[in-house]
Image (cartoon, rainbow, N blue to C red; front, top):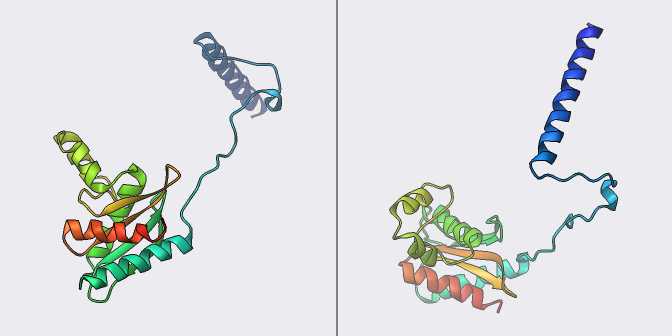
Length: 179
């Protein structure tokens, strides 16, 4: 058994050596310096994200706007990764509007543009349009609006339950509360 293990270690060592030689030969680099001495990219990057307080302020303003029009909508605020930060389903809003509002917010956050602009950008390419329509959480209709702070997307708002323009207007009314 010991002979078999030693033979396997020898083969693995030779295999690793061949891979190393091959990688250096095709343009890879090798440095004898310890990893700490090499110039490396930062381990972390600073990023901004929407706060819970801001998300709640958006929800409150959007609900007030919707109520002033006599509507019952669902409003979802997500962070820059499309993860829910806050949401509200107004009294009388359809339950089916909840996943739609979420998907509008998600799409806008991860694409960095409104859902309407994203849909318009891909509408001339049937294959791409069909592909995006099949992606989880992607929604191709107006009502998703990114939240941009200092030129960076920090989240998005998705609204569902009324006409496409009313959904957009409610999202914009919510975002206006924090700008």
